[in-house]
Amino acid sequence: DADVTQTPRNRITKTGKRIMLECSQTKGHDRMYWYRQDPGLGLRLIYYSFDVKDINKGEISDGYSVSRQAQAKFSLSLESAIPNQTALYFCATSDDRTFYGYTFGSGTRLTVV
Amino acid sequence: AQSVTQLGSHVSVSEGALVLLRCNYSSSVPPYLFWYVQYPNQGLQLLLKYTSAATLVKGINGFEAEFKKSETSFHLTKPSAHMSDAAEYFCAVSPYNTDKLIFGTGTRLQVFP
Image 1 (spheres, each protein chain N blue to C red):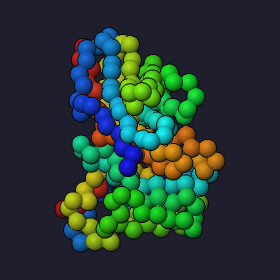
Image 2 (cartoon, chains in turn green, yellow):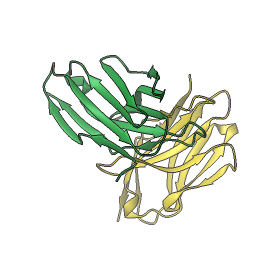
Image 3 (cartoon, rainbow over the protein chains, first blue to last red):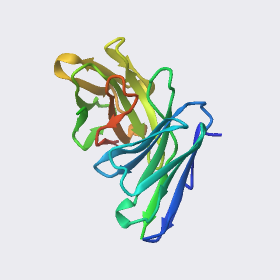
């Protein structure tokens, strides 16, 4: 099994619908992150969580919300999806003791029509 | 604010030629620096990282990068390109004591036979 698992892998949804992207990890890391990737823009941070009770906005949090259900689970929600939220979404984790970068999931490709 | 700039959104090389992907960062103190690779339809995989130890860092698949403080650069090189190196490469910086990654916009590497 992958260290960081994202579901679904692909999703097409309609404008105005609520959608949740899920992330679970077996790394035992406290820190989890959500990024979106757009062509030509790289990856931009949406939300991050350094432990279950610590959730923080990233640079592009408008239109998104998150839930940290447990150390291993970090979900991203789009309350009312819009077409410009069409993107590739990545979840990542990092070790809280020594920061040596992230372990990424395989991504969720979301299309809002 | 900390940032990272990748010069050249597309780089094309012939198989066997030198690969050079450029990355410059802005930071008031030496940050941690990373290179990630993304193969088609996959997540990001860590190639190498600089965490204030040796300035020449060797990574996987024959890649290496040199941290040059005077030039605020962390360019990625490989002496001889292989067809399997075709992918998108991201440089990322972790500003001091933040445990977050700021990504560049990526460079797509094409390798021609």
